[in-house]
Image (cartoon, rainbow, N blue to C red):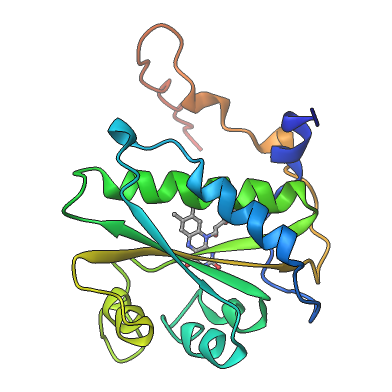
Length: 186
Ligand SMILES: Cc1cc2nc3c(=O)[nH]c(=O)nc-3n(C[C@H](O)[C@H](O)[C@H](O)COP(=O)(O)O)c2cc1C
């Protein structure tokens, strides 16, 4: 068993990738992580579209004005879909599966980044989910929650800086209002 605490500290969003393709075994492990993710009532209200085609990755990189460009350079994108009819908590199910894949990728030494699609728009104001749905022939009852891009890291990022941990967001026993800031007279 590896060191999970070290893994979550090391994982940072990677938006620059090398051109190296992933091995089939790596892709399989990432997809297995998604399929093993916990879900409400075990309903597994997700579906996943696996994209490696460069032309399609380019199209997906135009899903939003900001924050989707990195998809062009990744080796693999997994489009995470939530089945609206299957569960009332499809967003949560899809989010958990998304982060499971990201953690598995980090464990393989690969980089990844989340691209938010739900509740986002393309440059011309089209619903981003609809844009992706049309590109990938996704039926209307499935919402596109996220696209997770993966690849070999093309940038080194510092591990999480523990001095930035927001311990004030942890409330012991019950919720405590923040201490009022001292007023200065000058
Ligand atoms: C729900 C969610 C949506 C995100 N959407 C985007 C996105 O659209 N584009 C992007 O480049 N990064 C996106 N990210 C990555 C965050 O920007 C990143 O996790 C955050 O800034 C913390 O940085 P770190 O992952 O390097 O620790 C998203 C992350 C989450 C959890």
